[in-house]
Image (cartoon, helix red, strand yellow):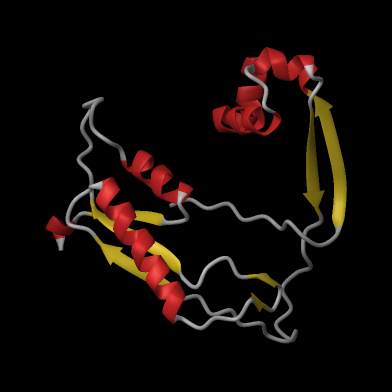
Amino acid sequence: MPTQVAPTSGALEAIGSETVTRLTEEEFVAKFGRTGLDELLSLTGAADFRELQADSARLYQLHYAEPPPFDPAAPARRFRLRVSVLFFADVDLAAALRRLVSSRHALEQVSARPDAYDGGELLAASAWLAVFPALPQTPDPASVTEKEVSDVLAAEGFVAAFEDLTTL
């Protein structure tokens, strides 16, 4: 699963902004993606891109300075990450979500955890991974894709993985 990491704290290097009125909807989507437009419409309460433009919405971009190079002599910081993994025999999203949510809730009830760690607030007692059988790569438009499964689980704070167990 590709991941992009960027510093979002520390020294602020630059701030940029632009008005939505100068962009066409196609330019906006090309620059920020369809999801970015949907999120902005939801946040502002605008019904569509034209209404967003009429409200003269501005987009702000914060660019943080690159962190200093790694210093092996600096004091070490350790972070413990508990990873909880559930394996599923099939891709039944409703059942998987019920099991993941109830398991997460149960773990949070019995697992002592600090309120914060050195550097920030804890979001959960554990990172959760759901492992499903690999989905067939068929052109059937009615079948669910690995991306769709991953997106649904990500919306609830879980990560999906797919393994082809026939090759083991």
